[in-house]
Length: 194
Image (cartoon, rainbow, N blue to C red):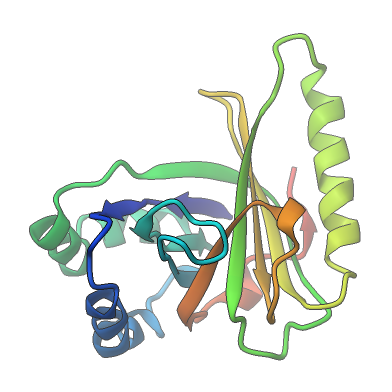
């Protein structure tokens, strides 16, 4: 599994209905994309749920890293570049994925939080503890699914969780899910992946 995201921060007065319409008319195009585990089409709106910005920020879990490369070189991503410029694409090696207690529902939101692994910390301990927290999180009410990724270049963890409804404040930044493409969720694996 590979996790990936990009964030397009938009002007403070940007009409977010433009993004809603874009996702409504194009989101289904990845509903059967080979190698994609899932994509949460996320947005944040300035002044809603504490967001300081308007932002379109999808999050991907790839079952096949080659599919991620095909997507980035394909027509769909060319459309992002054409309309918004080329965003920085972050990616992480997947460490953990588990469906939660609300996996059968359509998620309304996702949370995203990054965490730097301190230089003084033992990496194995940090990663093992993070996986254990996600194992526990997967059993919480309202969790659709949760994943953990690791970027060894920046020594960074990314915590990603889809929620059926409300996102607890401590979970991280909250994004409204406009659409979920999940053609290969079953191929993402379950549990620890290292």
